[in-house]
Image (cartoon, rainbow, N blue to C red; front, side):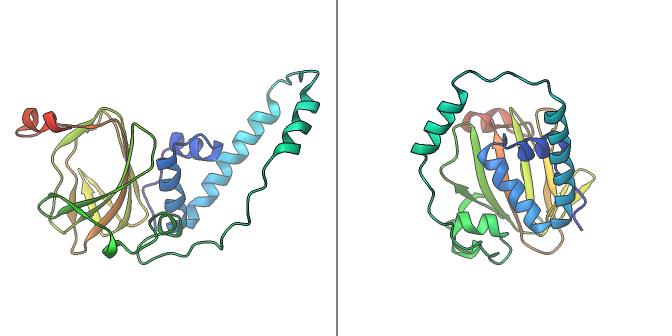
Length: 213
């Protein structure tokens, strides 16, 4: 069972519809893997509803009704939605719908020995969304962050300090985290990573490496 859950801040952003597109995809994928976490989402939504209910009333403009009716008259009706996507191998349904093909058919790019990356296109500037494929024993370079990083484990096992992450687990890191995750266990690790801002390398040769970030 998933043991490392998204933070309250990430869950609140998702529940309120203010999460970035990348975080929205990560959260939907997480909930598809770990449906027992949906109860926590519903609780967050209930809290938000209660706060909205208790908020002081704000008077509407005199033409609010007419403007709303005008918008309804010009509103375009979306076509019927396609059938709900199905999981695809290790890919939860929301992520499978975006990729449209199994992980073995993606055009992976070499990053480090044992590490390959597939970048998802079409996300807003300042947000990088990618899949990472890492073989057992592989490790990332030591780094911290100029922004925030969220990682969803899709398969395998990743160890970050004293924390062991498995399928469905989420890890969050920011500028206060200086870490070097590594792949443990005997299974290839796939994970979905969403970053705002860039990594800043802190280990050996960091000055040279940071020239390329």
